[in-house]
Structures are given as C-alpha cells and as structure tokens.
Image 1 (cartoon, one colour):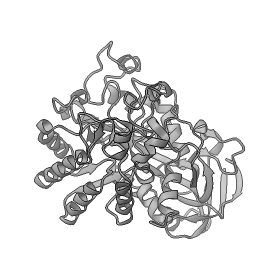
Image 2 (spheres, one colour):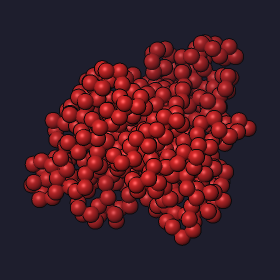
Image 3 (cartoon, one colour):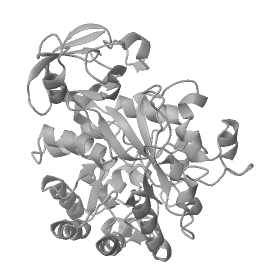
Image 4 (cartoon, rainbow, N blue to C red):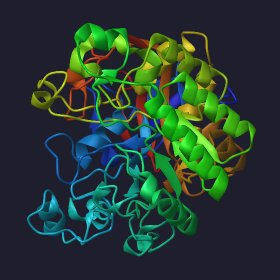
Length: 476
C-alpha cells in the first residue's frame, strides 16, 4: 500500500491523502530507488486522470524488433499514459481479414490461435501471459490491407466493436474494442472515401484521418529542403485533405478527426468548420509544437516524420491553435523504428519518432512554461479530451471524493474503498520538476527521438490502472 500525503487534485486544487492499494503484487517495473509502498510526502505532486493517446504504433504483430505490445505499453505507463489507441498499420493490417500463412506477421497471429490481427490484439493478455500495464483500443483499417483500393467490410470487424462480447468476469480481461477507423500513414483515397464514411456512420465509429497526401518529397518544401538539396513537400498537401474531408463531414454528418495537424492554413480551415458546427476535431503532436523544419539541420533523420516538420511560422500557428482551443487534444504519433533503419540517411530513413515517454515534459516546456496554457489545460489536452474522443470516461478524482462514503474522511481517498475501483486510472505528476530526456532510459525498444538531451519540466512519477500501481518513480 502506498499513501501519498497532501497531494493536490489537478482541477479543484484540493489537498488530499491518496491511498493506492496492491502495489507489490501489481507493480510491473520501477525506477531504481522508487517508492511503491509506505507513506510519502506528496505536497509537491498532482493527481490527475491518466493520460490517453489516440495515436500510437506498437508494431505488433509483424515488426516486434521495433516495438512490441509489452514494450509499447511499458513506454506508455512510464509516460503517465493509461490508455492508447493502436493504429492499424500492423502486419497483417487490422482489416479483419484472416491471416494468411507465410505473409509478414501472420505466423505470430496464427501461433497465438487468433483468426486475424484484431483477434490477436484483443486476446493478447491471455495468450502472452498476463495483463499489460496500459489499456488500449484498436483502430480498424479504412481499406483492405491499407492498400487504398477497396474499403473494408464492416462485417469483418463488427464483432470487435464496443459492448460486444463478455469482458465482465475480470476487469483486467478487457475487450480492447475497435473504436475508430483510419488508414493512418495515408489519407483515405477519393475513390473510396464515401464508402469509408458510410462504414463509419453505420458502425458509430469516427474517421481518424491522416490529413496529408504526397507522392514525392522528403521534408517540408522551403529554405531547408533547398539548402539540403532534397525534394520538398508543399504545405498544401495537408490543406487539400483537410478541406476535402471538412466538406465530406458537412455532407454526411460523420465525425472526422484530423491527426497531427501542422500548418496554419489547416488550422484556419478547422476553425471555420467548428464555427459552422460541423463534427470535426483535431490533434497535433509535441514535435509540431516544439520543432520547425530547421530542426532537420540539427537532428537529421531524427526529425524526419510524416507530415514533415513545417516552417517556424507554422510552428507558431500550431502553438496558437492550442492556446485558442482549435486543437482538441495532443497525441504523440509514437512511431518506433530500429536504429539501423533510421541510419539509412535522410532520403531512405523511415518517417516517425517515438514520443510517449517525454511528451508531457516537452509539451509542458513549450506550452505551460511558455505561458500559453495552464497546467490544468495541458492535462485536459492529454487526458480528458482524448479519453472522450475514444468514448471513455476519464477518472473524476473530485467526484470519487464526493461519492465514496466508505472513505474514512473526505480528505482521504482510499482507492480500495471506492465503488468500481477497477475503473480508476490516474497519473501522479510533478508539474514543476526539471529533468533531462535520456533516450537510453526509455522503456520503448526504440531510440528515434530528437528530444534526447533536452531539458524539460513536468514529470509523470506514477501510473495507476484499475486502482493498482503499474509504474512508479516516486522518490527516485
């Protein structure tokens, strides 16, 4: 049992004593010297609902040398995340089609006794010896095999939607439902867009759109691409998809969520759509807030991603869009790659960086320390809003205090005494702690980050899932 004395509730600012049971049996990993049992002065800490990230790539099945479910969930817990949404670019892709022997990743699926990748991931806990230290939802492919040629058939994955199947026997045997549809990595092609939107509408899903399309180019088109002599990607490659899909949302009423928005023009179009009352939302990522394309000159391939880092003017517009509420939430687009793949050079290296383990610190440095938003607003962007997007209810700490009659006093919140403790997911944060990002201490298998060595503020110290401590660096 771990008791955190005088901890601050993130939204009400009330000081309480928080009692977390079961720390020894349910602890997955700790930092050396961390406290995970006993009593601790937490007067400098904040308790908040756990972070949620609706945009991660865990490479399992098919590319577990980059990341596995176990290492990805460990990275999530280390970063204060209690829920993630796994994108469909697995091998085989998450399209609901049966795994074919001999194709990439299919042997892993079939060896686990699963029919397809969705089935494999929904029963991962059972077939891989135990619960993972993060909850996760799944995102189904918009097109078969993400090839962009034929829309997926909802009958291939309808059974994996929320509330289908019995997961009530044990709250830790979760169904990991499909809650969104996307071909992330590529925008849904024009030829199948209407069918994909119809599939989303009939199943109650929302479309997560990779709002950018280009057939050539390496980095953002501009002075940096010209200086390096590499093909550039024009900014309007993003805006064209954004305006197309805003019109599609207007026509169909389907909720379209735009991923990793990065340009001033796109944010302005989304502002106008929201003012019109259209069902559109958007996210951006820490790297678009913290870096411009000039970072390529310093970090090279570690700053290569898709969409590419944009101009400094676009970076400032991204920060402004967070500050004025145009951006609904922040997601990492956690994209692990092996070191040898990233070492292939700027033109050949794959796009993407990892982000789960330093996202809060980077965002806090840019947005809170920069004076653009408050600590409370950052938690809303990283926890409350993404949970709502995925159809979940974030833990209401103040509400637990008000309704938990079995607690000894209102000032003490004993998680063992609350109703439905299995639903309580929390992050314990030191909002003012300064620390240095060290990629070699990450729990992810990957090391592809431009933030290694950055001095940031705001550190997740512990992660609680289902009222159980799954990660702690308290006292370390």
